[in-house]
Every structure is written in C-alpha cells, then in structure tokens.
Amino acid sequence: MDKKAIRKKIIAQRDDLDFDVKQSKDELIINRFLDQGFIEKYDNIFCYVSFGSEIDNGKILSTILDSGKNLFVPYVDTDSMQMRLCQINDLSEDLERGHYGILEPKKNLRKPVNSGIIDCVISPGVAFTRKMERIGYGGGYYDRFYSGLKKMPFVVALAYDFQIVDSLPTESFDIPVDMIITEKQIIK
Image: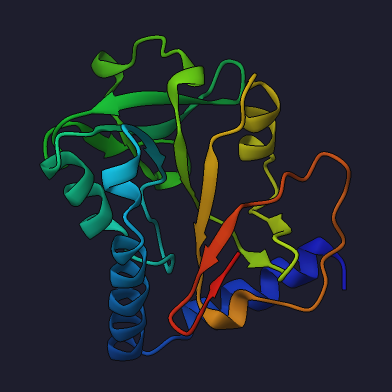
C-alpha cells in the first residue's frame, strides 16, 4: 500500500471510533504518557494541538502549563508553508483556528523562537511501525522541522494500537520517533 492509501485507511478507522471507546482509549494513552515522567524531565516541550479524530491531548497541554514548563505549539507560516513554534501560556486565551482549521497560537503571540531549545516533542502521526517509522498527513511539516535542528529532541508519538502497522513505504527524509505510546503498549 502506498502512503496515501495507508493514510486514508487509518484515518477512516480513527474517524469511525465510537465516542465512548475513543474517550476510554484516549484516557489510557494520556495517562500512560503522563506516567512516563516526560513533563518532569524536560523543560521545553513542543506538542501538537489535537484536531479531528486525533487523540485528545488537552490534558497533556494543561499539565505542561500547570507544571510551569515551557509549552510550544505549532502553527503554519502560510508565506513559507513552514511549521513554526510559538510558546503559549493559556489554552483558552492563546489559541485560535488557523491553517487547516487546527487550533494555532494567535497571530499577535507569534515571535521567532530558537527551535534548538526544544528537548521533547509530542508528535502527531497517522501510522507507525515497531521500527519507529512514522508517516504523517503528507505535508512534510514535521520532517522539515526536524531536519532544520542541530540536535534532535526526544520524540514521542501518541497513537491508537491500530495505527501500528507492519511496514511503511518510508523515504530518506522521513524522520523516525523515539517512542510510541498506545492504549495497549509502549514501543521504544
């Protein structure tokens, strides 16, 4: 299967999850992530803001802020079509609908950030393998972001167990993750 077909299949499975089942799986994944101690270990955390049928990571975002750590979230610079980072301090005040309808930092908060300070990334993705390979939505935003860093941060992905597949048609520019957390397992 090519990347496009894999994306379509996995996203359809995610979209078809019953609301209560999704909520239960999300809670297991989020608690499993929080139990790993990443928020205590890292000071500058970059985390996506969940969208659509992605795992609801709002509890992670609020826990990072409540712990006094620095939370950075992505936005798309529509001029360069590059993903940029922005530090936020308040989930209810600092975000608005942006590119693709995803919550992004308000425009007045966007200032240049030294991406090199990021020590942990909580990454979205559509499909993963046990070899830590990842494919996203096809825009290449995260791969381009990682390739521009001098030092790779620790990258953890949150996924439903069915998002783990036997193999993916990856390419040289596809950057793997360091850990995958699902409702049933931790792969590292």
